[in-house]
Image (tube, rainbow over all chains, first blue to last red; front, side, top):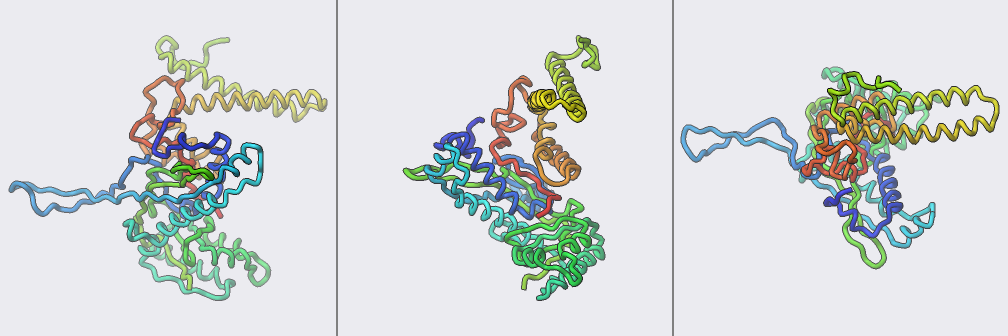
Length: 270
Length: 148
């Protein structure tokens, strides 16, 4: 592997330990990357990919000479996101000895943190990064919260009906924040039918655990509505090391934009 | 041994294309062997014989995988498409459609300038300096259609 800005070769880490770290990070991330399970993903286009073309322009008011017109291209910049963590030499050495219970808690926390950040950016937006989220863009009113989760299928069915009325085809997916997810999984409807299975029949699409999501979101999976543009996909890089630990990070660069605001409906968290 | 792995007159093909065709033929033969061993083992009653065939089957798995890796290294678009399908959870057909779209849309999967024998050097499938090494990421990419 050639050298790149991740500087992995500079880390005092064996191939075996890199494999351990990459595998652990991948597993943790895939479990938490709820948004990616529901939206379109383009790329990765590489670390040097800096912006997403929006296909639109702005007129330049003043030109150096008369009888000249000019327009500037409008782009959405990619945001570099990084979550740092450290792993102790002791744990890495134990891994090389064959230990099966290596302490990677800090890596796990970083993976969850950056996945949650991605979910929040996609579903609720990130103004400082220029990202408008799905729930921010949606023109549909939020569907009110219910205390009795036996009523949850009616909320989801209302959301699906709203999408269909807007001409948005399915299948539909459901992004559940942790609180709603737990309630849905634990709930058995009157008569003993699992709520989870009932919801899948309404949606005809996946139900996804999405840390960072407030309440829940029903959205179309038909494609072309929610666009994630990846520069560098999630990677583990090296920062520095000291006497006791190696300091690493998980990093990615991306932009996100909503092409069809009416293709999603939020279910209120409160 | 004939030369029927070539579909066009061999003398009109480049050495690179002939090698590619040979490896495609290799891949096919390894896949056939895997199928044959599976059939033989399913009807063989002698445990020792079955164990030997099982050991041989392992060799075919290795050969098939090496052949496949060689071919994927020589065809970046194939490699990019495979990246979204192989070792992925979820619906295989959905992963295939999504991966094909991403690989085609990314535009980074161009032919390598060097010999097909040279594997990815970490500078990505395109070998382009302007592209981040695909192999240094965790290779997660699209997860669309996966549940939970």
